[in-house]
Length: 405
Image 1 (cartoon, rainbow, N blue to C red):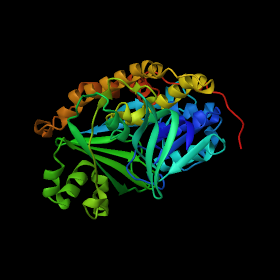
Image 2 (cartoon, rainbow, N blue to C red):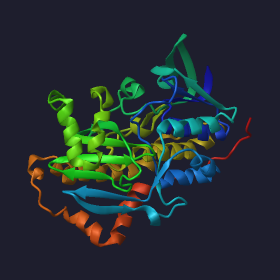
Image 3 (cartoon, one colour):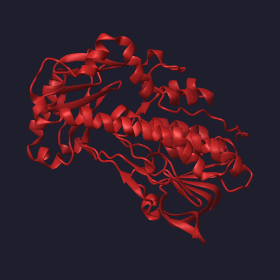
Image 4 (cartoon, helix red, strand yellow):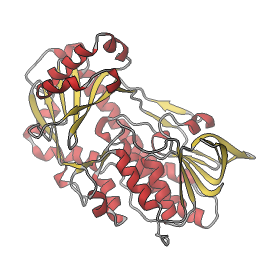
């Protein structure tokens, strides 16, 4: 198979880049190793800046017609006292809310609209396993399929295959690892109509429990100290359930929904960044270029913004059969990546690490100074709203639209 661009990874970054390039008439193949997008406990947050992109594409109305939840304010509950700290109702975007939509629905939506362009090829059950080389440059990928191996030759290969990127490992790209003090246990709990709707998380007794609103259930993250899952698991599922009920008492009657440890998924939190995102014929974007902490749920937003910037920068050269300026993509996206990771690292050190310490189990009756400031001065809540909802450098679509099928 020969295409202009081969994209390894059918996540948010890969699908958005493939969609935008094909929409502009650049032939692109997106390789997704699974048979479908239906995998639980993936990031489901669609930020206001991403919704703006849907508006720019003329797809916002159709997108919001899909089942989703909308949230405008976040609160934290520290020692049973609620502290509002994010208010999205004033962000400078078309949609002043954060949408929660299962990631498989988001990816299926992109695929559905991308398939309307003849230049788009989505190859399911196709996993990039190594790179093809032509002299000193990358010239495509070798991929495994149920029918055997295939070679996909391309002028440009894009690694968008996540934080455990196969292509990144094959290319031996130098990585800066910034570390993380925590891991997260993802789980689901049933939701009742009378449950609180705008609460972000619970902090008490040296534990952090995050609850994300869905229509019929809560997607939850139980934050644990790095590497402690084995010890926690050894204490038994009953103690784990009791710990959840202690954090959020209103779900006490529902923790039995966790029937076994199979209902709990471990997310190994990592924060890292490639020193160089590209080499001749090869570019990395999204988590493959910079793994983000789950703080703020901004990883998807950064990945999508990478894809938009890459399409804007690369399209003119690709369309004219010139070598694209891959370094320009890294230059464009370094600032928002460094700033976002810096903020996450600060929160990890100043907030997460503090609350996960045994000393934090002593109830003081007074939340952190910053949370108290957010509670008493509502205007301050617009600052984290802007950082979470829009980010440090929002991108806009500048690629043209080619004819549809």
